[in-house]
Image 1 (cartoon, rainbow, N blue to C red):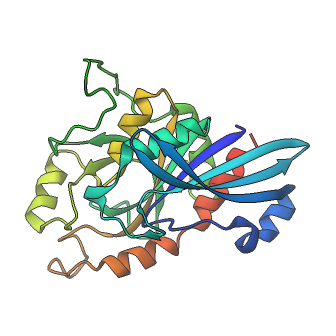
Image 2 (image 1 turned 90 degrees about the vertical axis):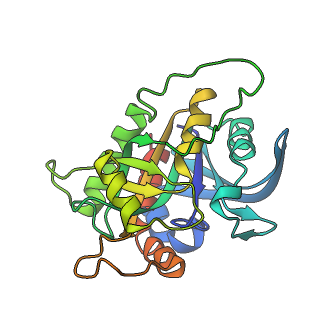
Length: 266
């Protein structure tokens, strides 16, 4: 994989592997050639990207980083206002071979405690809000298996190794798309649980739909940053804090970075 698109959000606000992961770069034989900040103009709007050019075993590689919450130089656009069409189009125009999304999620099931980093295996979107490039003509895209099996397999191996998980550890969960921008109520989380949702977030499912329409392999690395509403052990009435959720997600980035290095090595 020569050009890897990385989408960050609450769980990955920015990326600076040269400054923060110099030892890993050296040990793995990667060399940063240059880093560019560019703005891509799409028919849906402008998108800022960070392009990191890397040399590996005599071959040119590139990371294309997109902060999904980009908002005039900050990373604070609310989830219900994100321009997903522009974002995915910008990665397509950058000729990304794959897209890896990094998501902060609220955990519903017991085997996805805060701190665990896993993968999305399915999604459920009952928001009733369409997300598609096909707004004029009827084009129906199959999303029976929305995530790339090949890409997920590579990421799974890396996540197991970096977290010392055995083969028995569950790694795939169903992502429930909540509309946001508010966190869910306890009653909503109970209903989501009954309908098959195992983790909840506000953005990712819209991205994977669009990526499938463009035939770009897509996977989602999901950082369990908190228990969903009503699932905090011993305190089901505990409030959720956006600041705390963000900080907890950003403390679990090492497995994510190791995944990126593994993909660059392919």
